[in-house]
Amino acid sequence: MKTRRELLDEFVERLRFAAGPDLESVVLYGSAAKNGFHETYSDVNLLCTLKKLTRETMAKLAGPVQWWSVEHNEHPPLFFTTEELQSSSDVFAIELLDIKTSHKVLFGEDVVRDIDVPLNLHRIELEHELRTLLLKLRNHYFLAHGDEARLRAVLAKSVSGALTLLRHAVFAVDGKMPPPSNHEALGRAAQLFGFEPVAIENVVRLRESEDEERSTGDLVSIYETYVLAIIGAINSVDRLAPTEQWQRVR
Image 1 (tube, helix red, strand yellow):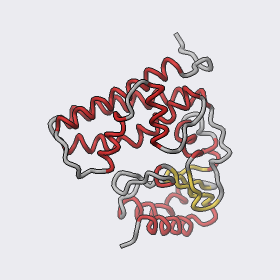
Image 2: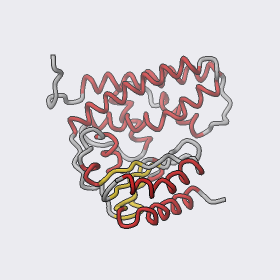
Image 3: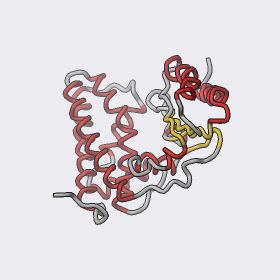
Image 4: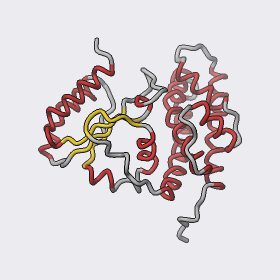
């Protein structure tokens, strides 16, 4: 059986063969491009840019994408033209800033290196994503109430995104991105936003030790402190992050 790395290499070759000279780059980003990749919960995140994305081009790419995403159950890539990617930094500020700081070019040019991300819009998207995470965690609790396995899966699946948002929250408040180590970044976030690091560390442990036996009561306690940490980050960003570059319309 092929490893995921071997499947990824084959997928890139299939994309190159299908798209030909229209394919400009394939970029790996997220946990698979750095330390912290988890075989069960980590997605292999890919960004592909092409000279054009016509119906004909997409038809050529459909076979490789179905092979990757349907046959091997991997997350489908993001497809942009290079011009679309460059003009998307205002609405994908968090995503592109994160990709810029942690990515590997698998084919072609480094198309994200020189993208300018507007930081005032990063601040707005950050609070939106944090509040959306909070709403999702609350809704998932209703659906998972009394189902230990489901609650464990909800917590484990969410924590990678939560760590990313906490890292960006530190950046919004501090003005500089924290160290790449999750441990160091979490320590700085806890210090700034007034929660104990264990509130997030407990969820990371669930993610890394999915077979560990825990009672439902323990999981509920983990959920509660986790949500309170997210709320602390939201309140701190709302209160402390610079907002002079934008204002509410009354």
